[in-house]
Length: 216
Ligand code: AP5
Image (tube, rainbow, N blue to C red; front, side):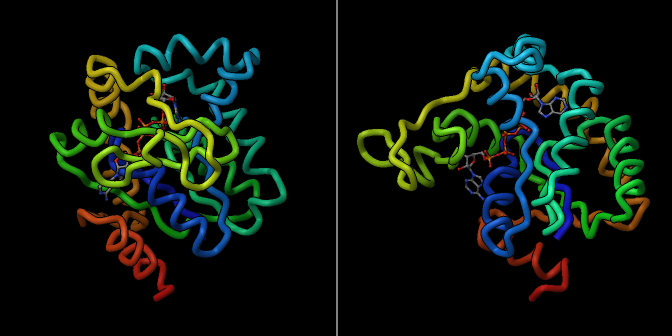
């Protein structure tokens, strides 16, 4: 599958992307995860991205576009990909369209995960993430807890809270989403690729997306 997951911070993009990737081996590409690894490894890109991420602002388009183009040109993406957190601006959506045209491929679906804001705030303040860069399993202290001693059930690494999970940063991320990313919903609706999903549970969401792709 070749899909884009749209949705506010905490809408469940990462959770659903991991499930879809397990379904058919399509590669999960999270620009947020890639950036957090760059920050952790102290790379030039990480140093430039860090201040934006800590404030809940978007990292400048030019840094993101190079990063995504490099990733999408890697061999494993030929199996399909699930874009989580990209595109996030109109300029990024246009750049993605140009890149896919150059690669001679198109998107199958753009999924809009539509979740009420009170649910989002609740989910983000209770989320935990595996600190192992090659795992990054997503937990939630209420709905999907890690082990009792705070470790990942898949790889055993400690499970942590992200730096951008403070309430004031969450509010800024939501504001940025409404201003810069939500206009993509109408943009993709006009192309006929948009698929709205409002279900509460991850199982139902995955089933609906597979139905939308004609795989069920
Ligand atoms: P990024 O990492 O992309 O963060 P985000 O979009 O804010 O999304 P999140 O990862 O916070 O949430 P999610 O929708 O994946 O939800 P999750 O599945 O974890 O970006 C971080 C930063 O990087 C940005 O602020 C920006 O600075 C920068 N950046 C990244 N991409 C960029 C780009 N393209 N351009 C510019 N800058 C960029 O779920 C949340 C919680 O809810 C979890 O605890 C989960 O267990 C739980 N949950 C999920 N689904 C359900 C469900 N159905 N029922 C109950 N609980 C659920």
